[in-house]
Length: 104
Image (cartoon, rainbow, N blue to C red):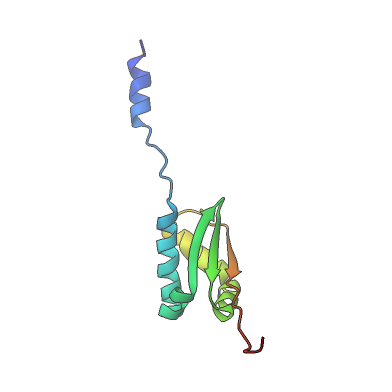
């Protein structure tokens, strides 16, 4: 049989709140909209989150450059919203666009 004191302390312990990817993605999209408007949100999409790194897919080299220049500020704003230092880095992958020159 377990001691009642042990049961009470186990009950008082709250499980740690684990952030889900979708929560981080929502905050990223909202922050990007505030900083760069709807075009920024359209061109910069969070794809996944792992080990403190947020991976972004970009459809625009211009917005990718903007995000790289302001990466630390965006990370600071996201962590401020999350009320911790969950995000340590942002990685960006620019979508490759192949243009057909019309010549075969």
